[in-house]
Amino acid sequence: MDKIIRIGTRESQLAVWQAETVKGLLESNGYKAELVFIKSEGDTDLKTPLYEIGVQGIFTRQLDIAMLNDDIDIAVHSMKDVPTMMAKGIVQAAVLPRASYKDILVPKPGTNIEGTPGPFIIATSSIRRKAQWLNRFPDDTLVNLRGNVNTRLRKVEDNDWNGAIFAAAGLERIGLRPDNAIELDWMLPAPAQGAILVVCRDNNEYCLEACAHFHDSDTALCTSIERDFLRALMGGCSTPISALAKVENGQVHFTGNILSPDGTKKIEVSRRVAIEESGNLGAMAGEEILEDGGREILASMTK
Image 1 (tube, helix red, strand yellow):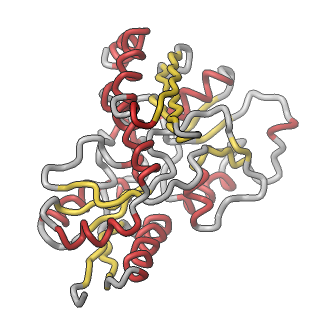
Image 2: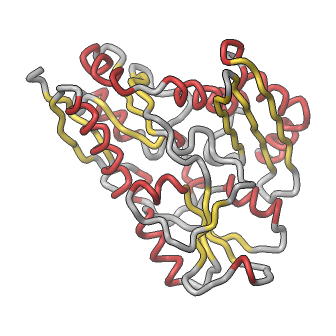
């Protein structure tokens, strides 16, 4: 195994942590690997809200190009950032076991949100998080927050916000989860949140074989269902769509929803089916949402 697998990654601390994790997994199975750093559009424009950039693939596009140009062999992504339709010639090589799928609120240091009446000022760049927060706390104000996790944590300290919403897995993976963080158990995550995806070219048998050693089938199944749900609703990061599938006692329990951006409208679906019958669960749940009023919400967002 003298071939060195070139791992493409963004330069953020979290992206590097994910790539280093995959590098370690490859090396533990006897493969050689090295990191190749590539900037993405999402790393260079830190001011424009993601939903105004045309966010589909914003964190993956440059890595896709590098892979198709044979500058890298595999790429490592937060799976929630990957479009449901990947670039032609690029396929899933492995899905790592899922970490926490939850969102957390990080209060401004010295702020006791749980013991203080609102309204509050809460920061997030995610339209999904904004919609769910406003659905629960309609009197609060939501402001935009961009940057890598380190930058966003600093902004919480430097601004007059009461707190900001983060993905738990992102902070936990690099040891930055604050002690005062509050888990938002009521907030449904983005499809595939907490999962790490490794991709490669569809004709790269060497990398496909190498990555198969650490592929997690349960996480792959659940994230596939969630992304099928997202695809059925034709949604991306600019649409308030959430989904979570979990394997429990031989069954898949799925919950998904769509909200209007202002949080005033919400449609939710919940299903439980046997694993062997879950192949089209995400698509069926998406169709149910559309029939129950999801089409109207989506139509209102395009006017």
